[in-house]
Each structure stands twice: as structure tokens, then as C-alpha cells.
Length: 389
Image: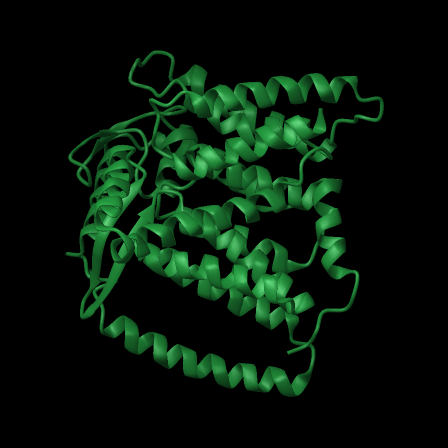
């Protein structure tokens, strides 16, 4: 039974990453329904099964604000009915998959699969143009992401961007941690593989936070004073280099397409709050929508997730939600938390939380910091002292 649950979890993760926007494909929903049903039955028939207090408390805490938001919004039919279920997804998974699946290993493996898909799309034109055209057509028809070039001022980057590419930050960082701790070529190769896919995504937020993630991981692995001094000098040099790169791009240009869309969302949110100040206190309700200048249409989710959370539940619900998903119960090495926190920060300016992939990230994070299956992962790589730089 455990093997079946693991197979379904890997399959579900694969579908979430490779078919992120293929809503018409029922396979993802069917696999999840099977996974949840079998996991619940298996969990309750286990003699040693115990509810994890951490997960239970957070599940009911989140469920309460979601339910309150749903009831509050019943009077308006312009809501997203799936929102309540998808938002509870990670906590359901964490309760019933405890000690059954190695979620961290799964996210690392599927991160490599996603990276291979990105690199394959990049090299296909030099191998076979007809095959490349067919793959690109399939990619675009499934609405899996964006292809082409992205220009940042004088810098041009090839863009092969899956909608789920931001999740690569996590396996990239975890493989880098493995390499720092064990110095194995396999970990180095997988770090390079996921890092290459990150560069090909041409996502400025993903590239920036990936760099910051490995930067801080390096810092926590340095345990000699002399190396810390060199690290400080490197930091100063990197800061000057980054300033020069940013000055050569249009990253902060308000006329840049992505920036203008975000500004449109923020302006529309400000107008909404000015007309209805009570939204900041009570929220509009779970899955509520509003007209945004960013997309020039009515939307329920935007590229500025933080303001979406404020619209849904108000400032108190927003603080509670962030606390639930960001702060672990158990104390573990900060380097294991860094990539997930950077994912959340990146999610505040991108629609990276309220979807199957974002919920999967939350599930893996909670399993990492609270469940035995993932604690074994940490103990495995901490069994020997980390090698100092």
C-alpha cells in the first residue's frame, strides 16, 4: 500500500509540474482523489497512526478562516468555488501522508524531471526542427508556459518558462545543500541541471532568489573566521556587480510589461480599498474577485498575491495565513528553511500560492519541518559534520 501511495504522490507531483494549467485534463484531479482516499484508509488502519498536533492545529486554523471567508461571500455568486478545497489541500496531505512518503525526495526528483523538460525544449531546435516545432506546439496548446526571448534593457535571455518553473528554487537549493554537506558529484550535477533550467526560465525573481538562497546556504556552511572574511569581500564585490547589472536592465522600469501589469493590480486594489475601507479589516471573502487594470478584466487572483490575501481575509486573516505557512514548529537548521521562505517571498509578487503547485510547496515544507519521514532526510545529511568552505 505504501508503494502505491508513493507512486500516486510522485504521479500527482509530475502532473502538477508538467501540466500546471491544463485544467481540462482530469488526470491530475483523478490522481489526487485516489491519493487522498487511499491515504486516508491506510492511515486509519495503521495501528501506530497518530494525528500530528502541528498539522491538525494549523489545518483547523486555516480551515476556519477559509470557511469564514466562504460563508461571508455566499451572497455574491462571483466567486471561485474550487478555492476552498485547493487551499486546504496541503494540510490534508500532511495529515494523511505523514511517515508514508518522502516529500522532499519527491520534489527533488520531479524538479530534475522539470529541468530536463526545459533543457530538452532548448536543445531540440539543434537536433530536429520538425520535432522542436511539434514540442513547442504541444507546450503552448497545453498552456504550460511561455517560449521566446525576454529582454531586460541591453540583456537578452532565451525564455523557456514553465508556469511551475519557480518551484525549481527548492530542488536547486536542496541539491546545493547536499553538495555542501557531502561533496558528491551527483549532487553537484543535479545542482547544475536545475540551475541551468532556472537560467533558461528567464524569470528575474527566480534567478535572484536562487542566487540569494545559495548565498545564505554558503554562509551557514562557513565555520572558520578567515573564510567568513573572504565571504564578506565576495559579498561586497557581488553587490557592486549586481548594481551594475541592474543599471543595464529595465528590471525596475515601470513601462516593462510585467511591472506595468503589477502596478495596474496595485492601483486597482488601492481604488477598491478607498471605496470600501472595511475590506482591510474583514476582507471580501474567499476567492473574491475585482476589476484590475493590470489585466483589464475581472480577476480573482493576480500577480500580487499579498494583496489578494488581504482582499480575501483582511489584515488579521492575512497575518494568520502567513504565520501558518511560514513558521515551523520544530527548530531545524535555517539552511533547510531558506529556499521555502524565498519561494514565499517570490510568491508575493507572482501567482505562486493559490494553485496546485503552490499548495504542493506548502505541503512539502510542512512535512519537512514536522514529520519523521523528512526529519530522516535532514538527519541523513547531518550524520557527519558539514565540510567547511
